[in-house]
Every structure is written in C-alpha cells, then in structure tokens.
Amino acid sequence: MEGLPGSGFCYLIGLVIIHNGKTFENTFWADTKNDEITIFLKVLELIDQFENYTLYHYGNYEIKNLKRVGNKLNFTNKKRIDKIIRYCCNVLSFMYSNIYLPTYSNSLKDIGNYIGFKWTDKKSTGIQSIVWRKRWESTGLMKYKNKLIKYNREDCYALVKVYNLIKVIITNENNLVSAEDTDEAMIIHVDNIKKSSPFKFWNKDFALEEFDMINKCSYFDYQRERVHIREHKLPKKKKANIPIRAKNPHRINKTIDLYSKNCIKCKKYNLDKKRQISRKVIDLKFTNGGVKRWIVRYRTHYYSCNNCKIKFLPTKYKNIKSKYAHNLICWSIFQYIGNNQSFIKIEHNFYEIFKLNVPKTMIHEFKRYFMEYYDYTYTKIKKKILCSEVIYIDETPLKMKYDTGYAWDISHFRRSTILL
Ligand SMILES: [Zn+2]
Image (cartoon, rainbow, N blue to C red; front, side, top):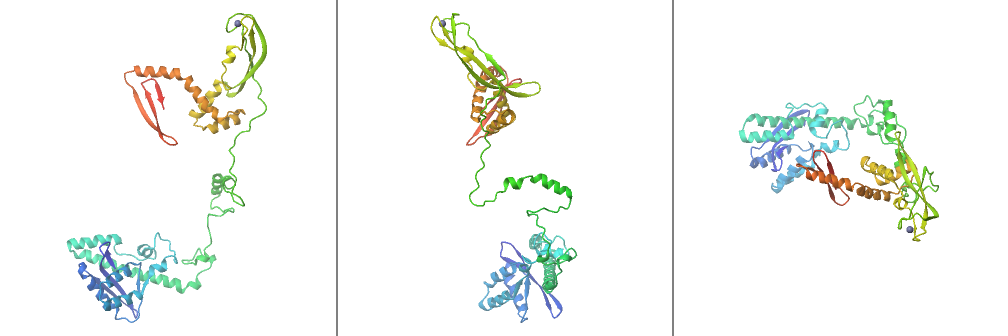
C-alpha cells in the first residue's frame, strides 16, 4: 500500500497473488481521496474469491489502513475487512528479533537489497514515492503514476523474496551448520556463533600484537585502582593524601645573629644582654642549578636598657613577621598562577619536593602577601596607564563557584595590569 503520510489516504494497493504455481499482479489506483473506498472494495472482491490464503505484508502500515477504511464501511464490508486482517501475516515481525542480516536496518529496502533484489529505479524509496505522487497530482503525467505502480509492484516481489528467505531458514532450522563451519556458512544459528565479546576480564587474544601493548598502556592498573567490589560495608572513602607533619626539625642552613647596639627608646649604648631567643624562617634558595629548602635561624637576645630600664628585642628581629620567607612565597605563587596548581597540590608538592609542611591555608596568606608586596608596583603601573592617550581593555569572564567574575586586562602599548 502507498499513501500520503498525515493525510489518512491510501492511493495505491498492489497485490501479487501466487496461486497454483501461477503469479498474478493486481494494482488498484485512487485518483483522489474519494476513490479510496472504491479501491478497497475492489481488493475485497478480489481476495474474497479465495477461501484460504495468507496475506503477507511488511510492517503495520497495511493493517492500520485496513482498520481505518474498515471503520468507514458498512457492517458487512467491515466483517470482510476483519477477515482479511485475520489472514494477514506481517513478515517484518519474523525478521525483527529472529533473523539478523548484516544490514543497517530491517527496512524492506535494506533487506531486499542484501538478498539480491534489484529495484528498477534506484531512487525509489518511501520518500521518493511521495514526491512522485505529488508530481502526478500537479501535472497528471502518466510517467509518475507508472513509476509508482512499478515501485509498488517491485516492493511486492521484494517481499516475496524475503518470504522465501524466511521459508528456507525455517525449513532448514534443524540442519543449520555447526560452529566449525561458521566461516563458510551463509546462515547460522545464533547458538553456534563463536562468542567474541570484547567485555571480559581474562586475557584477550589480539589480532595484532601491537594492540596488546596499546591495551596494556591504556589500562595500566585501572582495574586495581578504579574497580571496587563491595563485599560487606560501603567502601571507605580514600583519605586525602595529607602529608604527615615531620616531627624532626630540618637542618638549619644558616644562623643569623641579630644585635642591638643602643636602646630603641633613649638611644643610649648602656645595654645588658638577657635571655637568648631564636626563631626559624623557612625559605627556598634559588641557585643556577635549581632550588632547595633553606632554613634560616635568627638568633638574638632580650636587651634591657640600664638607662631607661626598658626591655626590648632588636627591631630587625621584631620585623620577622612570618614563618615563611619571600622566595618560598614566590615559588608557591608561581606554582599557583604559572603552573595552574591547586592549593592542595602545592601543599603536596612542598612535601614531595622539599619535605616541608606548608598548609594550604597558608597559600591564601601568601596571596595576600603578594597583593601587598605589589601594591606599590600596581599603583605605579595604573598611574602610567591613566596618563597614556590610548587605553586598551579586554574583558574575560571567569567561571567561579557560584557566580561569574571578570578579569579586565587594561593596558597601553607598554604596560599591562589585570584587575579582578
Ligand atoms: Zn634606654
């Protein structure tokens, strides 16, 4: 049956009747929608000549149309249509999920082509048939009608061929070849197919030995690292690899003694040395060959002034505000900005490379330190830019956790500053 989708109109019915070894072709054509019932009644008349038959069709389109038209007919004729529906056999339902052909789809076109059926017009498809029908409607040219009739008839013969294929398979079902002959056989039973699923856990035989190597490289310890089998309880969450704080202090690379010669208040030189104190500052030392951990111990005494009686520490000592020194902070910020490392990663690297415990919270402090450190430079650059005749501004959105931030790159031809 050929119809126009969406219009509820079937304009062409083709039947190939094989009776007593003879083949008869029948075509019923409707010029307009009003002729549809007429052609269905003609089909009824033809089929009713046969007492016993099977009406083969492909897909559910035919049944849908028979039911649709049947509902428009009187009681007697509806009964006749119902009888035909009972004698119908959808060949597609046999193909679908029972017979697997090496085709992209189960369409009559794909299967027909695979089993060697040739349509006269290679363009003939369901969509093309709509085009031909529309062209016939607008021009009335016989060539389009003839194309459609031929296409429809050839579909019938293709169906005959598919039917024959199924018949061969069913009749030989018990004699289908065994697994040893599968390479030669055209049709084999699914049970006899050698299983070649790639999804298995034992060693595979690769067609090329290079694939074995590639496979090894791609997986490494994937199964050991990533696949967990839950036996009893929920698997414990793997603890973050936080380095254990080293108890032993690192070797001191340098000791700097700080002195006071005179009183910080009265400036007199009459001082007494009191208790000695010291503090360690952790730093890194950059050399031509690399970078190493550098621990400096600052040592001094409490001083007491014999003149004004105050007790004090040398100013230089008091000015040591942080446990971490400039080079170490530079290195962290370089890792953070230059190497795009996360705070956790930087913390980890400090331990891995220098055996230093620098908590990631400190890196926040380092950022603040740098902000203050470069504040003067920033102000100076800004001043220069504002004095220039042309300013270039580029905006880049930054995806943040809850919001979108923006980085503004403001520059003139020599200097650039970034505002966040
Ligand atoms: Zn003093």
